Length: 351
Image (cartoon, rainbow, N blue to C red; front, side, top):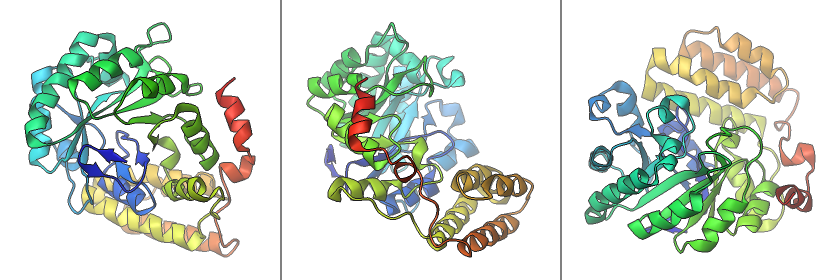
């Protein structure tokens, strides 16, 4: 799998998620089997570039390449300037956000709202490609199937974007209208893949090794992008990779390994955000890790009252040590709980 001149370790990608795919999370996912990760979106507004939030999102210190930064905005020149700003700060690939369904983004005509104005969307892509090409920085793009069920234009836009110089397209199999509700559909992804020569990435509801294989078979996509299923389960990438390679499942991770991974994740998180913000923003990550573990709900409620990083880490270590006394491995989730076969998943995708 290549994006421009960059060869990737594999075809399993971490989806860009606002408030989630910061540097510590991206690095952890890459350690656990992801071949590529895109940053959470960075605003194209220059008046916000010096803000603490943007500076953290543009922080790639120590991160293995290629460094991919997603930018969001509504004005072609401003987006081009944002691309150059991030290239100067280490970005090796620029990704354009046309997939975010959040109201605060779409109300400003950014994110997936751009799919309503095809001329504007294309002008933004052309402007970004124009400044990135001389720097030998590939431009990619993430989009949805369309704005709503009656206006699915991903195929039309994807063709235009390819002609404009975009070197990879990721398609989330939902409209903006759906948000994250219902089920993702993959017929649109398959249609885009059949029409384009550049790599096409399938995204949406890929939450198990079986589902990953089924989506690849249903779409012919060049790569898979995993988002919400990796929250609190960053080892999903190695699980999927192993299953695609061998047809067999990895055993769930050892409790002792999850303890180590979570503590290391927290320490890296605190180092980026500082004590006050780090403690508060770490709560969601801890909650995701423990949500399916015995006693997880009660622990999460307790953990949300803690006000220091030391107290958080101590509580996590105590909880995981207690769990380790009861079981060697974390309880199986996803494929092992449902025992869904590949043929069952394929049937669900086509009905």
